[in-house]
Image (cartoon, rainbow, N blue to C red):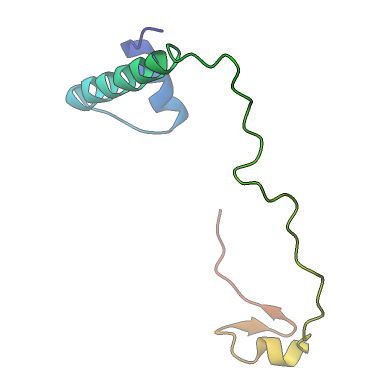
Amino acid sequence: MDINNEMIDRLSDLAKLEFNDQERENIKNDLNRILSYFEKLNEVDTNGVEPLIFMSESVNLLREDEGFTHYSREDALKNAPAKDSDYFRVPKFR
């Protein structure tokens, strides 16, 4: 795969980033080095190697369900910096 300026422009558009010419060249070089590393990994002989499904021998280690204390609405809102009757008030965001 060849990393060219059009690909860098497309990636920067998708990531909503802007690069000057020097940054564009640095990113192009970095991506080329990353791809060459993965091409090097393709040279490794993996015949007879089982795929790794789990990172450890432990499977499905789940904790037991335990009850917990429920807080009343008044207790939950007691230390809220801002509240509106029964709700937390938070700043509006987009």
